[in-house]
Image (spheres, one colour):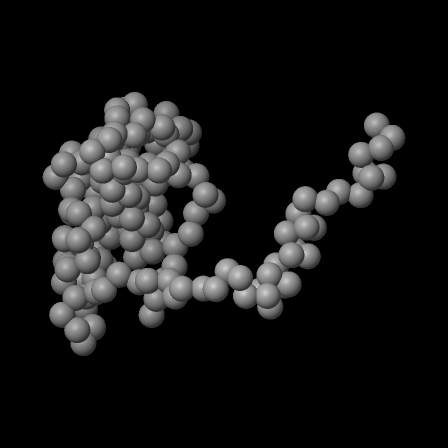
Length: 164
């Protein structure tokens, strides 16, 4: 089974060796360093968010939650979460590599992709990253299908804006 995770397009462009300082994304999935206003490396923050996603997929609830943003922030910065009784030890160990308060001690994507729980049931030795198939952006059939949809997003009937 393959799962594709998408977001709303809130992101930063990351360059190796440079730090980011913008808070973007959904607060329940944000790493502690974002709440603390620290400069951060993109991959470490992404690993934390993937840990929150994994926890949510496996348990059906968020590891960190609150009645308001202040309460959520306190819980994320504390980094304490409950492991459900039904979660396997392998999954728990993997989560402990994702949800680490110190970003430099968090697992890397490369390490996590070799994890036993992630690779359980695979015939090959380890998970390979998914690569989107190359698409021909000049394909006339594709362009013809997308054009009306794209135009409708930017076209507003005149009567809806005039008279004011």
